[in-house]
Structures are given as C-alpha cells and as structure tokens.
Image 1 (cartoon, one colour):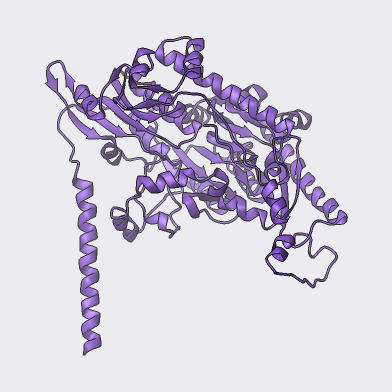
Image 2: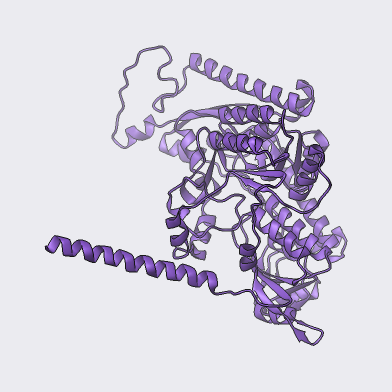
Amino acid sequence: MAARRSIVVFIALLFVLGAAVLSIALASRDSNPAPRGPVVLVWDVPSELAESAPPAASWTFESFRPQRPTVWNVVRALDHASRDRSVEALVLHIDGIGWGWGRVAEVREALMRFRASGKRVYASLSHGGEREYLLASVAQRIAVPPLGIVQLDGLSISAMFWRGAYDKLDIHPNFEHVGAYKSGVEPYTRNELSEPSRLALEALLDDQYGLLTDSLAHARRASPARIRALIENGPYEAESAVATGLADTILHGEDLDSLATRTRGRRRGTMTFTRYLERVHGNDSGAPIALILASGDLVEGRSRSVAFGSTLLGSETLIEALRAAQRRSSVRAIVLRVDSPGGSPEAAEAVWHEIERVRRRKPVIVSMSDLAASGGYYLACGADSIVAQSTTLTGSIGVYGGKLNILGLMQKLGLNVETLSRGANAQMLSPYKDFSPEELVRYRAQLATIYRTFVSRVSTGRNMSAADVDSVAQGRVWSGSRAVELGLVDALGGFQRAFQMARARAGLEPDDELVAEVFPQSRRSFLQSVLSDAMPESEDETALRMLLPAELRDPQLLLSLTRGDIQARAPYTLEIR
C-alpha cells in the first residue's frame, strides 16, 4: 500500500512539474502580443548567431536550450520586414557579438536592404569593437549611452603554440603536412609562426582591414584614410565618439527606442524582433529552392552536438539532405550553405561525390559563410557555382596529420606501457612511440595521395589545370575577395546572390525574395520544445564559452591528435578580432 501511495505521489509531482513548465513556456511565448498598426522592430542583437540549429537527433544538454534563431532566420525575417508595410523602422541594441565576419557581412547586407527599402534604422551601441560597429554603421542614427565605449582600435589574429609545454611534459609531436602553407601542425611542432604562415596571415589581415575601412568610410561618408586615422586613435568614450563623427548622439537604449517610435506627432507601437521572427515562417515547403545548412567540423557519420556548443557536420547527414532535396519534385535548384573549417578528408570526398551525382539532375550553388576551408572547400569545389563573402576564409587546399607520443609524460607520472603486436606496422599510430623511418615513409605517402586527389577534385570542379590549382593551394588560406581573383570562387555575396544564381541556373524567373525549403529539417521532440523555455542560457555561460581559447572550444581537433588522424582542415583556429 505504501509503495502504491509513493508511486501516485511521484506521478502527481511529475504532473504538477510538467504543468508548471508548460505554463512558463506559454507565458513566455504570449508575453509580447502583436501590436496593431505601424510598428518599430526592436532587436537585442544576440552575442551568438549560429548557421544552423543543433542536429535534431542530439540529446545533449544543449538540445534542451531555447532554439536560437539562425543566420537564415534573421536574414529571411529582415527581408520580409523590408516588404512589410506594417513595419516602419528597426532599432538595433548592440553589446558585444561573437559571430564571425562572414555572418556579420550577411546580416549587414540584409540590414542595408531593409534601409534601402525606405525604412529607418537606429542603432544603440553600448560596447563593441569592429564587428559591432560594422553592424551599427548601417543605421541612419547611431547612439552611444553615456558610459558606452566604441572599441574601434584595429584588428589582430593570434596563434597559440603548444611546443614549449610539450617539451616540459616530455610529449613528442610527430606531425607531417603537404603544402608549404599547411600550418595546422605548427602549434604542436613550433614555438612561433613559420615565414609562410606569417606571410599568409599578414595578407589576410591586410585584406580584412582594407574591407573594414572601405565599408565604414562608405557608411559614415568619410574617406578610408579618415577611418584608418580614427582606428589608430581608438577606442572612444561616448563624447569623443560623437565629436569624431563615429556616433550621432549620446542616449540610453530605451530613450532611443522612444525616439524611434515618435514620428510626425504620432507614436508607433513596438515589437521585439524575436517575436517578429516567430511570426515569419523560415521554412517554405514546396519552394523551388532547397537550402541545405552545412555547419561544423566535418566528420564521417551523422551530425551531432558536442561540448562547448560545437557541432559536428556528419557526411551521412549531409548526403541524406542532398538526396532528399534531389528527390523533392518541387525543388528546382539547391543552395548549399557551408561554414566549416574542414576535417575528415574521407567525409569531404563522400560529400563531393554526392554533389557530383546530384548536380547532374539539379544545379547546386554553394554559399560560403565565415569559413569554408580545406575539407570545407573540398566538398564545395564540385558545385556549379560558388559564392563567398569578401571576408570568408577559404582555400587551404592541403592536408596534415600525425600523433603525439605521450610515453614520456606517462613515465613522469610513474606509469609505463608495454605493447605486444603482430605485423611490422601494427604500432604505427601508437601514442607511445615515435614514427620509425619506415612508418614515416608510409604516412607521408598517405598524405601525398590525399593531396593529389584534393587538387584533382578542385581542378575538375573549377576547370583549372592541376598545376594552376597547386600554385594557389599548398594549404594557403585566402579571403573571399582574393579567392574570386584566383578562380576558386565565382562571385561575392551572400544568400541573395546565391539564390539569384540558383534561380538563373534552374531557368526560374528572377525574384529577390528569399524563399526556400530548409534541409536537414530539425524537428525537436515535444519534451525538448517544452523544457527549452524553462532552461534559457545565461549571458554568463555564453561569455565563459567565448573566453576559452579557440583551440579548447574544438574538441574534435583535440581528439584527432590522439588518433593519428589525417586532416583536411584549416590551419590553426582562425579568428580575426
């Protein structure tokens, strides 16, 4: 009897808890009802903006978080708002963003289209550097609160080197690479940049800095030389930001909201951009264009979420999405959105092969985001056309691989390893010994074979000779603007340019409206949907994740070091700040 009573009480508690969570969810969704009449959209620009939602099959802690809007959701909603007669203006509240430059460029283009439609844009910049200011510069009016900071002070790129720590720990790196610029091994084998790496990174910084100053000069109606001088003297407090013309006024964010809602003696209502996103459906079943989102480190198998909010892009998942889009009779063309540093060359080859098969029936256009390098470029090079942002990091046609010999470290800790084996090369990838000369010959041959295949795929896909590909390959990373000049990319732009090219290839009438059926389709379980509203991620968690070195936010890269994996992957974990 007691046991039965306990079961009843437990079920009742579960019911009460479920009802409470459901009430919270419903309350949060209904807390911002749609106002009547003309509105001003107010957007608290998020610190993170993903290219794709977490994989549907993932049951990680992250999968129970509220589903954040993706770049596609935001761009689609902004374009919809530009045509929506009920929306008259947009206010941006910007206070630190961690997006890459490609995503910033994509959203900025959408904001510029919104402004070009005749609607006003206001920006409140509480704190931010180059990326934040680049977004804010679209606005007709930029406000900084009294204690705000415009951290416009230049760009930098850092590389972390582990060799000194390995020497102290008696860890012996055994790494090889193909390509003079394929510097992915350098953090483990050197204490500083090699000359080829320094040359490549300096060129990337020059390209990015030039694009930044030109964009800001156009937006603020100043010369590039004037913008460069302002950057040299940054950062700026509120008063100096206004005095130098970087900002227009000193106002708190809520006061800017009030200013934006007043026009011609009448007051307009407001709606949060988040609420507007919910009203604008981002997946249009039956649309003639399929949009496939491919984001994360490239691995064999299925896509999945891992630690620190990272996503692994599984070749099986991506191939299934390509096949689903090909089978859909309503789909006339496919836009493949790539944001990946690469990873497994076997996975890249499998996806490349599938794209070759699919494009015989339907055109495939690649749209590159922040990064489509090495394996990310490998899978993309077979598409009919490639579109990239000027700031996209791409190329890195090369491979590397190796292992860490940790036997010395283990012996320092009082541990020892004794291995028995059969076969001359059974311990080739063992983490308890260095490569023998014979093993090194075999390993280098494997790398050379993959590199030749990679160059061959690019040669075929880009209609270039193998010699021409090799001259721009060698593992070097290029900006999107340079990649166009070199023939690795066809055109500069984002979603809109890619969709225009897809429609043209498919013989569809020109139409600038961004409408697509999205693959793979992420469907959350009822439990994930309900609990997500009760488990919001705090800003502290986001900030903590961004404070970690980029290398430590990439568990797949760390894992590959322990297995001797060969990687078609971008060098370092590139972040221009």
